[in-house]
Amino acid sequence: MKFKSVFSALIDRFIEYRKASGSWNELCYGKNIRYFDHFCAVNFPEDKVLTQSMIDAWCAKRSTEKNSTNLRRTQVVKLFVDYLRHRELTNVLPPPRLKPESYKYTPHFFEEDELIRFFQACDHIYEHSRPEIAIIKLIIPVFFRLLYSTGMRAIEARMLKVNNVNLAHGVIDIQKSKGHDQRYVAMHDTMTSLMVKYDEAIAEYQPSREFFFQNLRGGHYSSNWVQKNFHALWKQANGTIFKVPIANDLRHHYAISNINSWIDDGFAVTDKLLYLSKSMGHQSLQTTTYYYSLVPRLADTLRDKTEAGFNIIVPEATW
Image 1 (tube, rainbow, N blue to C red):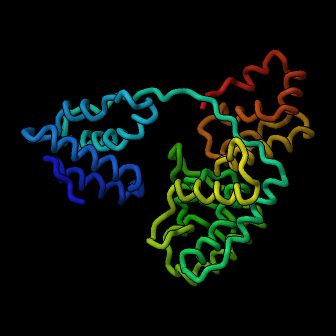
Image 2 (image 1 turned 90 degrees about the vertical axis):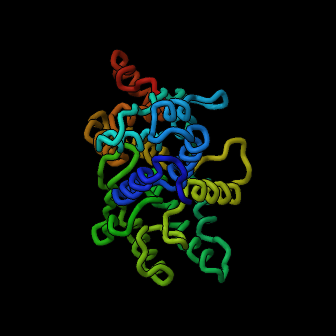
Image 3 (image 1 turned 60 degrees about the vertical axis):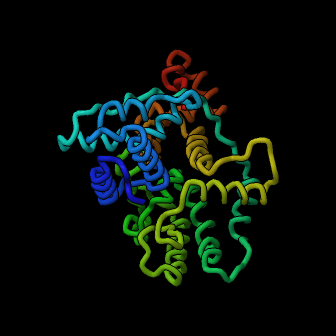
């Protein structure tokens, strides 16, 4: 789709730059930059350059929006303005950043038998001769086990590239994520073995793929693909319940399971906590210590032992 606004050429340059740096999300950014371009072409036909009025009008919070929704819609415009300002191509100011509404999210607490049934469902996707089904049958058991065994975010697994997975040493190089910090994740030997088998099997269908979990179009899967398949397999395995878990609950389970395993190890957990925080890509220890409040046995024990400092160790967290 060609852009129609007076600054269409700059949008093209911006997108080319983001793609070259590996930080372009077509599903989200592409849609919203097109909407913004169309809005400016229709509502500011006489203007010859990008103006502050365009930015302010498009980025203003709508009556039907939450702050978080507004942030998602306008994020690409902010990135576009920042790109232009850094190159002295505009003097307009980026939109003000609204503070997202705070909310508390309680992850699903998985029972062992629930997980067993879920992974059995992953392993028994029906046979089909169509290539896309054959590929999904290979991907899904490995993809969700990777989330379960490493605590990776779903987006990190979706965007994972082949050249960032060292199968010889069982190490994953996550170069860009929520906090934009590079980190390394070591896989368990059994997970590494499964990844090796998958890599060999998928080569029959995608011999020179870019993404480790690549779709038929040569790109990565979307977040909707992850949730759709997770929900379908969960319901197949465990039936319909009031609150269906989400894929990222596997990440929460990873953190809670690790912390639970420390309960009988005494209280020299600082090193373990730091390792867990770094492995999960948390930007601060405060984010990791949130999980202490989700482990009742550990929380109660810590309260008995360190009553005075408990509220510092286990802060009230909002998500």
